[in-house]
Image (cartoon, rainbow, N blue to C red; front, side):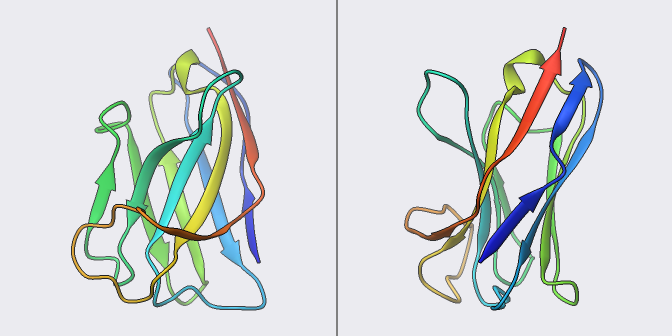
Length: 124
C-alpha cells in the first residue's frame, strides 16, 4: 500500500515536499512516479524516478522546479516542489510502475499501484 503525504496550502513561490511511503511491501525494484489531478481535469504525469534511482523524468510544466528522489533505506520517494504556482494546485498521487526493474528513463506507461492522493493548494 502506498501512502502519500506532505500536501498543504502554500503561497505562490513557496515550496512543499511530498512523500510516498510503501507499507507492507517494498517498491525497491519498481519505478515510482507522481501524478496530479486538478478539478475538472484529467490526471497528468508529473515526475518519475527509475527503480535504481539513476534516471528521472519530468513533465515540461515542472522541469527546473520539481525534483524527485528516493530513499531505499526508508522505502520512500519524495517530490520536492519549489517555485510553486497556482496552476500546480491539484491532488497529487504516487504510483508504482507495473513491471519491476524496467530499464532506462521511467515513463510510467503502465501503472501497477496507486496511492491515495494528497491535496496541494497554491494561493496567488
